[in-house]
Length: 354
Image (tube, rainbow, N blue to C red; front, side):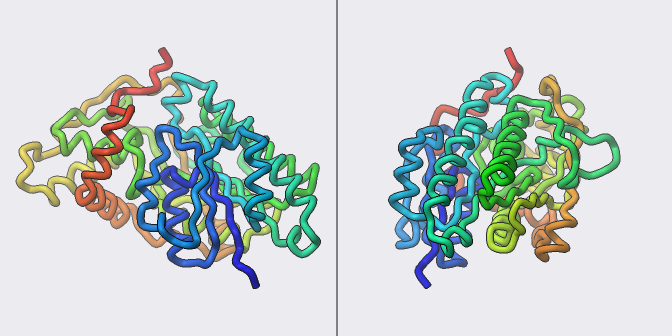
């Protein structure tokens, strides 16, 4: 049987690059990474696979219909894993237009290119084709003190980011029900791990702590998130692509609920242990409480029972093991980190909506 070609959109991003590294290491897919290379896209995250015969990079915008159609014709993929998205809540508050364009218009353009390509495949190839849409738990809104997000939880997005991701989920579902496009969908909780862009909480705290700078915690730090190690997520994504039931949605979570303040405390304590001679010990002394994000959702938590029961997935990393691996990686890869920070993002506060 000939080698399967897989499109990964947004493959230079944090989750996309982890997925590609995993697929090239552990499978025989030919991967075509389609990425616009916005500020958060970083090809350095893919250096380990860049020379592989199974990897090809195409710099392209998913909103470019002509280019997307051409790529489908050029590579004849057996599946699409769609991760390309503007993904930072704070940035969506300051500038929602890019989120509407990429997350909604871009997903529409990609769906149409995939649909026209799929319709013209022979019967066997059409039966094998899959469009896997990767989304977020933020589409469900916020939880109270109890309960978990299930696949059937009504959508109630509260930020421009989550609203555009919810819209893209609805488009994918509609293209399945209206046109028969073979889709699977996943919604994940907060990812963390190596190669994460430093605007996100965990790398931001690590970087600031290393520099002896204040560690900003929004509000009282009591917002709760469910944390998922990125390699565990990549495992789940491959499983859903290959074994997920068409038209179904799967929640992927780490069963790791922690307040933001708990996360920061654990990071500080881990840094104290790994860098006992740092002049900034104890790192908890650097914690600073700052104005909360507008409309900040209080609690997210995912019920990942369905993917566990139906596909046999569960995370390998606990929060303790995953977080330690992450801190160790950032300490060992300060050059990667510094090159990212030398770009346009300088760890300034985003998302005040001003």
